[in-house]
Amino acid sequence: MRLQRGVIILSIAGLALLYSCGGSAAANKMADEMCIAMEKYKEDDPMSMLDAASDMMNISKKTEEYGKVTEAQLKRAMMKKCPDGWKKFESLQGK
Image (cartoon, rainbow, N blue to C red):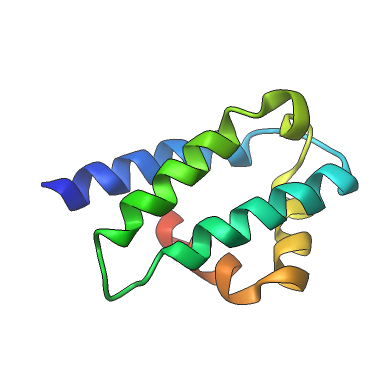
């Protein structure tokens, strides 16, 4: 049950992050925060998903800072900073 809630929370956070639009300095800063969140998520530990989800929810609330960052910009920044983090993020989204 908790795992399902975590997946729902991550889905909401992911959608909030992915439906925003433009800025590479902002994308780099957002990627830094996303990389930290994804470091917390261990695929063999479902409870770690909740820690990552909490961080992602906090990131998604920063619309002043990150409201114009596109998914492509975030992906580019995360692929440079933490490619494994981007892969985890994609896997959580079901991609």
